[in-house]
Image 1 (cartoon, rainbow, N blue to C red):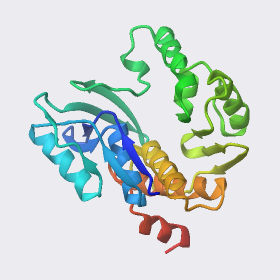
Image 2 (cartoon, helix red, strand yellow; image 1 turned 180 degrees about the horizontal axis):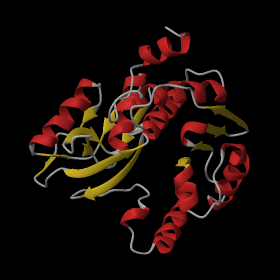
Image 3 (cartoon, one colour; image 1 turned 90 degrees about the horizontal axis):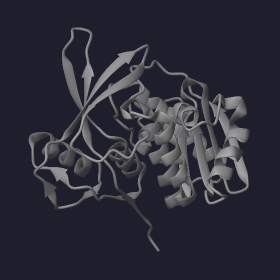
Image 4 (cartoon, rainbow, N blue to C red; image 1 turned 90 degrees about the vertical axis):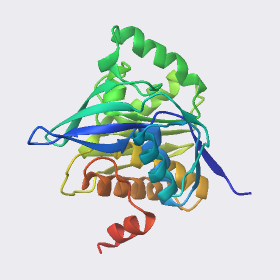
Amino acid sequence: MKKHIFVLGESLMDCIAQPDGQLRPLRGGSPYNMARAASLRGATVHYLNPLSTDSFGQELGAQLEADGVQISPQRSPRPTSLAVVQIQNGQPSYGFYRESMDVNLRPQVAGDVKAYANAIRALLPFADWIKASDEDLQTLGFGAARLDAAPALAQALQAACAGAASRIALTFGGDGAYLQVDGSSAALPAPRVAVVDTVGAGDTFWGNCVADWVLGHSASTEATLRSAMQAAAINCTRAGCQPPRWSEVQAFASGA
């Protein structure tokens, strides 16, 4: 039976600050990015959130359809949310102008970060698959997040989930990533590329992981991790979130 991926979550425009002070609008939003990445990997993906009727909403919808994602026919009269992105040393920082529901871990918009983190932790037992960045882990109180500590971090996260999560992915920026699937695990260093920025790298990584599991293509946890990291690396060579097609990942893996 063919499996489908259903994605619920915000879409927005990343307004990326340029060296001359101008803002360059690019399509974004973590679930939106993940839906695109999974579809470009070859999965059948449905994006459930209603997009805005404004011009940005039209642009966001057109991109999803171009990438093969099936979208909701419903539209919202509310304006598309904006994220102003400042890039320093390739790393993005965000300021938000929102009309949508943002389900990401955003400590910078929380008045009480500790209470915010506790609320997120309370939801962990309801998650079957979890992806967390090093910044997420630190915000949630799991301590120093390093690739060499990934197995212990995954164990602590599993305990916080009351054993509910069967698949855990941890990303550590330019250092690499760790993937745990049931009883198997793998850790790999990040591929070396000329980084433009890292916007959407984690979303691209996770979209490829989920698509790979749904499609059942990879022979091992390490193979899934490697291809997802390669997809994220390609995304980092582009401005904003621009996930690669599977053919591009294959070419990258072969050194073409």
